[in-house]
Image (cartoon, rainbow, N blue to C red; front, top):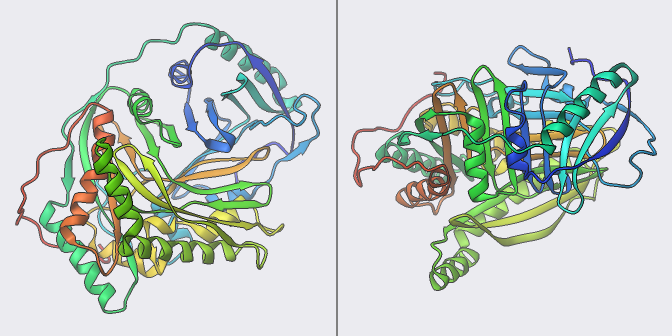
Amino acid sequence: MVAPIPGAARSVRERLESTLTPLEALRTLRSDAHPFALSGTWLGGGAILGSEPLHVVAGPGGADPFDTLDARTALEASADVGAMPHVGGGWVGYLGYRAGHLVEDLPHGPSRPRPLPDWWLAWHDHVIRFDPDSGWWFEALWTEERAEALAARRMLLAERLASASPPPHPVGCSEFVATPGPAAHRAAVRRTIDLIEAGDIYQANVCRRLDATLEGDALDLFVAGASVLDPPYAAFLDLGHGRAVVSLSPEQFLRREHDRVTTRPIKGTRRRSGDADADASARAELLASAKERAENVMIVDLMRNDLGRVCIPGSVEVPELFTIEAHPGLWHLASEVTGRLRPDVGDGGLLRAAFPPGSVTGAPKVRSMEVISEVEATGREVYTGCIGMASPVAGAEWNVGIRSFEVDGPAVWLGVGGGIVAESDPQAELDECRAKAAPLIEAIGARMADEPVADTTGAPPTNVGA
């Protein structure tokens, strides 16, 4: 059963006076239930913060997340908003990788050391939003039933933003230790290459997991990482009970604005060292790499197919192919696919057609996910799912749940991986995992445990049906 949401609402917004940055403002929500933050380029840019949701649905066992997102909220015309960009409120949360089991019949996969909910969505009828041009706003999906409560929240949040930000709490992590070890990861890559050469798949994303112990609060972990890296799709979700998601993702999964849908898959990586000549050479090498371009175009074709299931026939296009993007410590190769959503398809239907993201599964998608369940050592949680927001006012946007720390009490972990194609080199893929993890772990003031160059302790995992 889908959680109840208002049948009709009026979107309103009111200016708030504050000199706080979004990360400072997030600390004012620490004592509330389920604080969240989206910062970067979400839904037009700036930052969206909130807390105290009216409803939470989580799985397995809770309402179907796709059906939940398809439940529409009627909006009345509002003179309070006019043509100004706004968000109002909506569903905020994630669909973890295992939500893919709702879409396809997949193997159970490897063991999960610290299971998190397969999906988690919270309904917020109000948010505070920072617009880089005009400052802070209180925005709400206003109903008469909630008018008194929303007025009280507006006053409370205005008082908090007008005050000094509470100081940060100390936060730190122990060394991050990878599972599987280097030899086992190289063996998993070789096994995947064997399946590609046998014609079983074209590409699969093979990952490792880095675990550490967290000392402090996940909210401060997010502030530390986001303040250094400033990624375009940063997200913080407090799930309650000591669980949280700290996403520092560079990658857009899906954006819906009215009926226009965009996806921007990233495939292809080179290191950036800060040395101008070396970085220019790495950039040119990435752009010229037949392997990286093949990896990218396979996922572009997959995403074209996914969007084609729910978009108006003939509307799916590729306006950008092989664009170089600079991210902390890395060059990435990105492309863009767009389409016009059919009028009978909602946000849940769009997600169902494209989930999980093709850039972190492979091609063909279902078979690559079967291979992932065979060769990876641990089960994925939020990692390689999606995190974001669906608003009846502003549309929807979801990131690819990569470069994300996941927290369960004192346990914190980070998934890293890469797309494997026929030309992949197992050692280079291992090096790429470490290159992707390094800027994230350094940003929070931690380090990766040293690994032997030749680790003979691991064998390729076999997890089908485990």
